[in-house]
Image 1 (cartoon, one colour):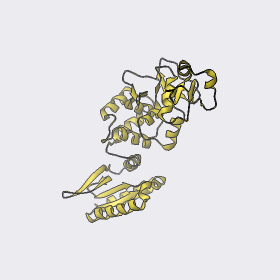
Image 2: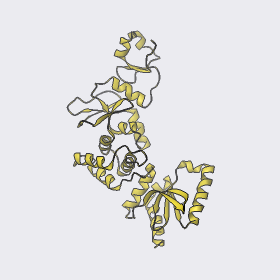
Image 3: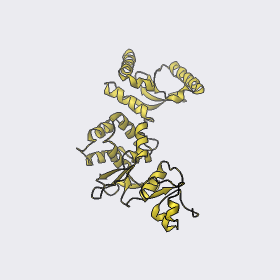
Image 4: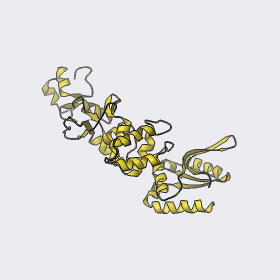
Amino acid sequence: MPSGTPIGFTVPDALARGITPRRLRAKDLSSPFHGTRARRRLIGAETLSLLLAALPPHAFVCGTTAACLWGLPLAAQQEAEAWARPRIGVPAEETRIRRMGVLGHRLAVESGDVVRRRGLAVLSPSRTWVDVSRVMCLPRFLALTDALLSTRHPLVSAEELARHHERFAGGRGARVQQRALELADGRAESPRESMVRLILIEAGLPRPECNVEIWHGRRFVARVDMLYADERLIIEYDGDHHRDPDQWSRDQIRRAELESLGYRMIVVTRRDFDDPDALVRRIRRLLTASR
């Protein structure tokens, strides 16, 4: 290959570089998409970059693939499918992309709906939010909305999401958009925290505060996932990393410190999602007992 040949390239670009058709048929090159070649397996944004290079300039990344590109949380299976079969959009007046290994869409887009991310044309975060609302259940969509509004690294404002909701009022996904706007909290820091909060609210329990700092005088004690302040009840979601022995020890010391200050704690794990009603009953009993 000539010096400077990229890892992935289109056939027209290769021919312009002087690479012969015979060389392009060599077995050491793969063809990720029609009209393209790659010198090794491409991953993530590399694949999208090559795909868009082979498509008309008005094509852009959309749907769950756009969500992946923005680093938004999806279910593992949904994320894998989004990368394996990219979602590519074109303006509604253009012809939908039809290629093997690609899901093509025609979308209503206006100025500002398509932006650049890692050098790629992609739906803006707000427009991606509208797009994925049509294919996501409320628990997962709320987690994605919380991530967009994250107080640490916000991608959009609640006002901007509300404007997009109004713009597409009555369309597919409008109801889940509305509910997510009502329940969103940018202080949530993980999808599971968002999903636990939704379980509690939909069961009729009060809405807990998210990621609250607890102090004893001027001494910082802990930052907890969720808190019912009046009842001094803490709800913590423990992922698999809490199984680490050192982490477990730190968790116990932290819990003992909080309990010594009069707080009670309930720990939620992924197994609680198998029986959310039982989780709600436990938390309701603890809330009632404090009154």
